[in-house]
Length: 429
View 1 (cartoon, helix red, strand yellow):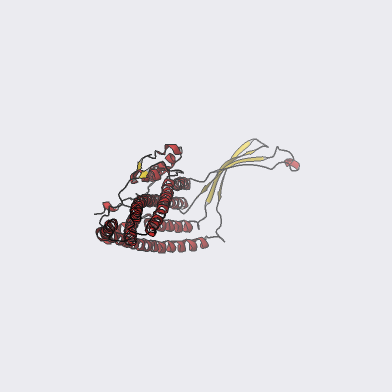
View 2 (cartoon, helix red, strand yellow):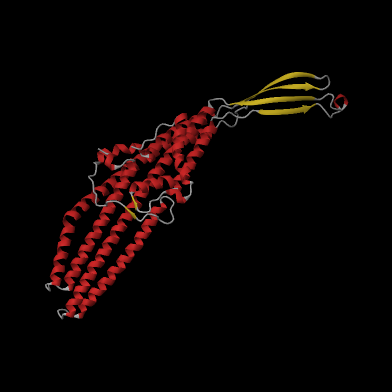
């Protein structure tokens, strides 16, 4: 499981450092991304995305900003140094500077009611929330990269299928030409076969363009403009058993979008405590020294200032903080409900796609292939016409295309489930 530890003063720096490692590597030259030129595996694609994804790097800066705010929240207010001169430039004995009085005072504001501690706890909660946001974005990057990788595998499979369909169409066209030449069928048979070859070639060219677009989308996951890898390596045909929903649901507690609300509620409570502490005004303590110019003597001074909370007792801020706390508690329940609903839907899509994939592979594809082989052999022997061959060929092509789409839907649904539970499905026992 991808669990985020509790952020204490010591551990928060460690987590932030780990989160920022990706940002430091991302800042390197794009040529140093080590994208393979040959076959690209899913693990390599995920590693490249984590190290060089621009959006993830932006979240790393957010983590660093939160760390700075948490550090700043615990700083004491600065003292004030004040220099004052009076009793000069008047009349009589105060005409010149001889009767002046000069004072030098140092004033320090003292926060009462635990404001500093409450403020620091609020900032630490915000820092922990930034950590959860980073973790959520990291899981998003992983899921989107997986799906982009699946799109490349799908496009590669579609291109292979289109090329094989073109070979078959060309073989049928040659057979039709021979039968026309021998006078067994009219010229129209050869014309139809030629149209089918042209149509299949158009499908093949479209598949090439779609593969190029899919490769570019995958490369964009790690900030690449033009893909370097030649092809994506993977077996879309691998369909594993789906863990029951009851084993997956408890894992939602570690989902960043759910777990972060524990921290949101804690932050709201600390904010309420801070709002209540603000009712108590801060006092200012000052000490200093005065010099009397008329006789050159010195004397110490001391002072105490205390604002009178006659008008502002932060009552509005307290009411706002109470409602924000209630809002956070409601949002916490809503987040868990949204996650549960999303998991149920993704799990259903995963089970449906798996069942369809197994049925298609075991029943539909063999039947369609057998029918096409029989029609093609019969056409060459003169038992069937071109229409029968064309019909069985299209049925086989549709079955193969459908199978590829089902496999892609299965693997994308698996990526969605893994995004929700924060762990690979193969690790769930």
